[in-house]
Amino acid sequence: MQSLPDIRKQLSSKELFDAFKQQLARDFQQSNFPADFVATLEPDYTTILEKIVHELQCSENKSDFNVMSLLYRIDISEAQLKRYLNKAKNDHYFTVIAELIIKRVLQKVVIRQYYKSKDHPA
Image 1 (cartoon, rainbow, N blue to C red):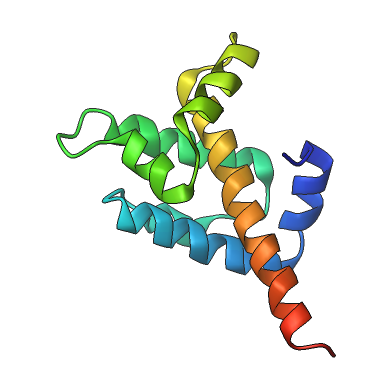
Image 2: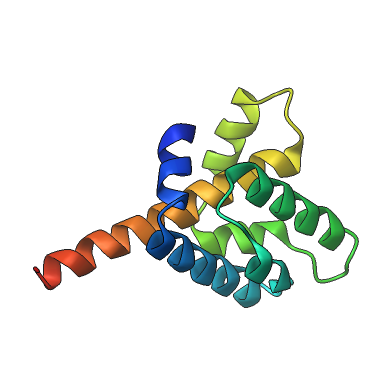
């Protein structure tokens, strides 16, 4: 996965950040999670992480809360989650999940952009 400086650099690109927000909102909505917060996001990794953690915590007590369905939708495996949780033993559960979500959604967007530019050379 990407390092934090790479992620911050990618989030500072307006085109990538807008695509990131669209993908994040789509993934949350299709997993029955509230996605209203996505529209207010700024291209700051720490703020994005905090907002996702907050949304996960707020949704935790709702009857339709299913973090595994969200992770499945985003394409984060249980094995990957367990591996990250073992590495980050001192971090809060939702912080680890939020970090994985950011990295994977950004990865999907970057890959899509890469292949889109390959299909349509300038």
